[in-house]
Image: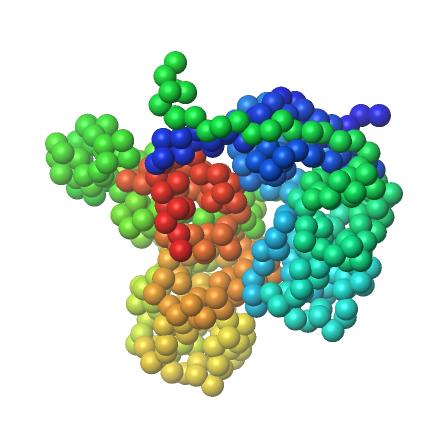
Amino acid sequence: MEPILRVDGLSKHFQLHEQQKLIPSCINVSLEVYSGQLTALIGPTGAGKSSVLKCVYRTYLPSSGRILFFDAKGREIDLALASEHQMLELRSREIGFVTQFLHCLPRKSALDVVSEPLVARGAGRESAREKAAELLAMLNVPERLWGVPPATFSGGEKQRINLARGLIARPRLLLLDEPTASLDPATTDRVVEPIETIKAEGVAMLAIFHHPELVRRLADRVVELAPPVVATELLETCAH
Amino acid sequence: MNKILEVRNLSKIHGRGCPQCFDTTGPAQDTNICPHCGSVVAAHDVSFDLYAGEILGIMGESGSGKSTVVKTLFFDETPTAGEAVFFDGDAQYELFSLNAAQSRWLRNHRFGMVYQNPHLGLNFNVSAGGNIAERLLMSDIAHYGEIRSRAKALLARTEVLPERMDESPKRFSGGMQQRVQIAKALATRPPLLFLDEVTTGLDLSVQARILDLILEIQQELSTAMIVVTHDLGVIRLLAGRTLVMRYGRVIEAGLTDQILEDPQYAYTQRLVASAL
C-alpha cells in the first residue's frame, strides 16, 4: 500500500532576528501516513510534535526536508514547495487540521462555526448547516448549544466543535493536535468514537495525543521524536 | 481556480525621479526617500497574482506603499512602471495602457473601491440612495423604479435602514458611511473589490460587523478582494494570503497563518510581536 503522506528528513528551526537566536524545533523527522490508518507522534514536550503538523499544513515554513502528499488525483506534491494557491486548495479539499484550541469568532453560533469550511468552499449556507447538525449530533453535542457561540462551552464541548469543524469538509488527511487534551475519561470516549469511525471510513490521520493510553487505542504506527536540543546563538551558527 | 489579476513590477515614484532612486531606497536603506533627488519611492517592484474569489491582504505601516498599490490599480494614481492585467471572462485588459474612457468603464462596472475616508468614495451632496443610483446609472440601468429598488435592496443588504436612504450620508455615523460605500461599490456586482483601511478608526463593535459583512459578501458573490490594512486582526480574519510591505517593497508574502505564526523577516517578526 502507498502512503498518502511521506515526510522525509523534516527539520524546522525558528530564526529570531531581534533576539539573535536560532531555535530548533523538530529535527530530521521521517514518517508515513496511510489511508484508514492513524500515525501517532510521541516524544517529550518541546520535541517539535506540533511543529511537524504545522509544517505539513504550512502554517510553518519547513527549514529542510520533503513533505510528499499524494492528492486525490494521484499526484505527488511536496508541501514544502507547493504554491500558496495549491496549499489553499488542498486545505479546502483534502487536508484538515484540528488544533489544540478552538479559534473562532465570539459572535458565531456553533452551527455556523462548524459549517464555515463548507461555506468557504462554496456550499450553500443551509445545506452546510444541515451537514453541521448531523456531525454535532454524531458527536453528542447537545442540541440546545447549536445556536450559541462556543466561547462559553466547556472544554469537552469545544473540542468536539473543533473536531466537527475538522471533519465536515471530509479531508483525506486529518491532522490532530491533542484533540483530547484536558478531557475527562468519559468525554475522551466521546471524541475517540468519531475518530475511530472516520478511520474506518478511510481517512488518514497524523495525530498527537496527550495520553499513552489513547496512542495504544488508536494508533496504527507510532513515531517518536528525539528530545529537544538547546537554542543556539544565531551569530555562532551563521558563522560559516 | 482562475486568475483575475496579475501585477508585475509595479513601481510608483512621487517626484521627478532619478536613476539612483531604486538603489538608494528600500528596507535595507531604511528609507523611501531618494537622497539624490528627494523623490519618494512609494512602491517598487510589486508583483502578485489574485485569483477569482480570494482575499489578498496587504499589510504594512503608514507610508509602506500598500495604498499606492490599490490606488494605481483603481486608476486613482498613475504608476511609474510595471504592468497589470485584469482577466474578465474572455476579455483581458492591460490596466496601465488603457485610455481614459476604458479605465473609467472598468472603474464603474468591473471594479469597486471602499476608501478609509468616506468623502473619497461618497458624494455627500446627494442622498445615500442617490450615491448608489449614480453608480447604477453609469452601468446600463436607466429605469427610475428599478434603480430605486436595487438601491434599497443594496442598502438593506449592507444593513443601512431603508428609511434613511433619502438622507445625505454626511449625517450618518462612520460605520454607516462605510456601509453605504460598500453598497455603492457592490452595486454593479464587480468581480474585483479594493478595500483600503475600511475599518480603521471605527469602534470595535462597528468594525466587527463590517468585517462580518465583507466576509458574507465574499462568500455570497465570490468577489475577489484586495484588503489593505495595518491591522493584523483584519488580516487574520479576512485574508487567505498576505503581502507585507515596507518602504514600497514587498518584503514577505505567504499564507496568512504562516505570515502571522512563522514570519521570516526581522521586520515582520517585530510587527507580529507588537500586536496586542
